[in-house]
Length: 112
Image (cartoon, rainbow, N blue to C red; front, side, top):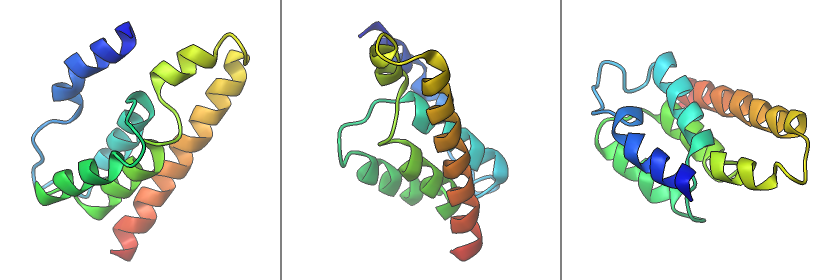
């Protein structure tokens, strides 16, 4: 619960105002993939978030990275399952999802 509160408090710095100059950049893809790993979002809540951010100027690459990483794992869920799973398993899952999210962002940036 405290983790969700802290993440909610810092979301303004994690999702700054989108500038068209970096709306589809590598830095944005990596940043949104990382942010997707942190936040806990209800099922199907990631689609309206991506739509809103794209309407504000976010490119297809960062949106794809966010859509790929948001529903899989979050910091609060990793903390909750840490008693049942070793940290290296959780870290491996997060690392694989991060890499696949970044890859999907680059594919979307090229494709669209």
